[in-house]
Image (cartoon, rainbow, N blue to C red; front, top):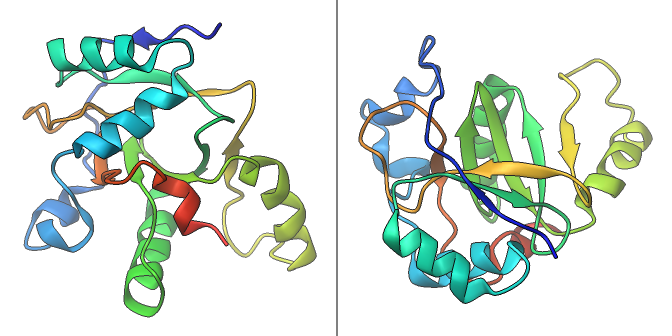
Length: 175
């Protein structure tokens, strides 16, 4: 049984690299709140009883959580500038993206389970080399901090750039 840890946000606020998302660009990539279906999808990752996770989130919707990867989603963590470029490309030229969060100076792209295992080999095959910073892949056995369901209003800590809004969440954005 996997336990879920609900955290108080104690993230320091260094220079805010995501300020450009809030200044004149708010609606482009950001969904302010997680929908009910998105919350159910996140709770399904917690293991055990998803209803218990939803009850904790209902009691404290402004609290981030730590959820395990590998069942409902994997997470690809990238440099924030590269992450922004990826989002721009996905939204301007492609299908958009699944959920995306910002936390501790990284952009977290939520992807289908199994992505963390396959992505490094795919990047090697495509001969990416040192062209871009190597992403960190979080899959089975890893856990990530998930932003709160509603914005905390402090401007610091984890936050959704693209909030989950469907039960399938990230699975629909990975081909």
